Amino acid sequence: MDEPFQLEVACLPPHCPVTLRSTLCSEGNDLWESFSHYVSDERGRVNVSKDDSLGGSYIGCEPMGLLWSLRLAVGGRQNIRLRKKNMQTPLVVDISLFDGHTIDNFNTQTALAMTTMERWYMAPGVRRIEVRENGVVGTLFIPPGPGPFPALLDVWGLAGFMEHRAALLASRGYACLALAYINHPELQLGSGMGISYFQESWKLLQSVPQVSADRLGLLGSCFGAAIFILMASELPDISPQCLVAINSPSGFFKPGEGKYLEKMKRLLPEPKLDANGHLMTKDAILAVGIDLERSLQAGGIQCPALLIVGEDDQCVPSIESAQRLEAQMRAVGKGHLVTKLSYPEAGHLIEPPYHPVMRSSSFILPGQTVTLLWGGVGKPHAAAQEDSWRRILEFLDKHL
Image 1 (spheres, helix red, strand yellow):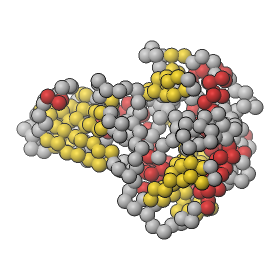
Image 2 (tube, one colour):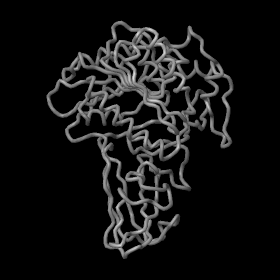
Image 3 (cartoon, helix red, strand yellow):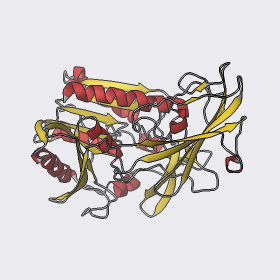
Image 4 (tube, helix red, strand yellow):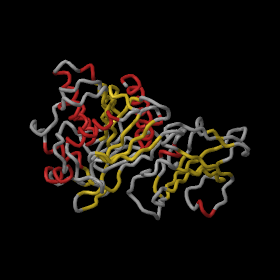
C-alpha cells in the first residue's frame, strides 16, 4: 500500500482527450471514486507519472492522485473514513479509461480499457495474531522469518482501533502490536483504558519470542501519541529506543486513568462550527489554556523523538503541543533528541501514503455523532503523508 505504481495508456490517437477513473468498493460496500483528465502525446500515450492532469479530482502531475483523491461517490453514504478492517485481503482498485473529458455518468459509458490493482497492507509471509492476554486487546503482526525483530506498539486516537499501519510496518520488518484502548467491545473500560493497561501491553510485547526486547519503540497518533509521550517521560519501567508522535495534543492534556471521551467532553467549552456545520475542536482546546497540573511534562523523555505536525490540524493544537515539548526538552538539555516535521496545509489525519485525504468525517462522542473537522488540503496533505512515512521508516531504521 505504501509503494507507488506506474500507470500508462498506449495506442490512443495523438493529442486525444481522455478521462481516467479509479473506483474502490470498501468492506462496508461504499463506493469511492476519483477521475482525472489527460491529453495523449504525439505518440498517443499518457504517462500518469509524468503528465499533468488538466482537471477532475486533482490538477497537475500526481503519480498517485487516483488513490489519494478518492472520494465517496455521490448518492451513497458520506462523511465516513476509509477503514480497512481485514488485513488478509487487499484493497481492490479498478481503473478505467474513457474517451473525452468526462465528469459524471460514467456508468452509462463504455470504457476504452480497464485494469485492476490489488493494494496490500500485509506483505507475503507476515503473520497476524489476535492478542487477548492479561486484559490486553490488540493484533500482533510479525514479519516473515524467525526473528528476533525490532518491535513497536502502535495506537491511534480516540476514534478507536485500527490495524492497517501495524500491518504495513510488519511488511517493512517490524513486529508491531496494534493496540485497542477505547471503543472496543472486548475492553473492560470501553471509554478508555488507563495507563496501567499500556504498561501491561509493553510487557506483553517484550515477552514475544520473535521480538528483540531491547529494540522496542512507540508510535502513536493524536491521543495515542500523548499517551506514549507520557509513558516515555514519566514511567521508569518503560524504556523505548525511540518515539514517533503524530499530531499529539500532549501540551494540553495529561492522559490519566481512562474514560478519555467523557473527560474531554466535560472539560471543553462548546466547540465552534465551521460554515459547513463541522465541529472544530482545536480552538475549544486552546480556549481552555494550559493548566500545568493537567498538561504533560515531557522533559523526562530519554530516547529520540520524531514529532509530526500538520499545520492545518483543526482537531487538536498539535503545533502548540510540539513547540511545548521541544521547549521542555531544550530546558533539560535534551533538545538534540527531538526532530520535528511540520507540514503546511496538512491536517490531523496523517495516514500512511496514498490513503484518501479526509478533511472531515463522522465521529462518535458520548450520546451523539458529529461531523468533525480534521483539516488538510488535498495535494499538500497527500504529500505530507508520503514524505512523513518515508521519514518515519528512516527514523525507525536508524534507532531500532
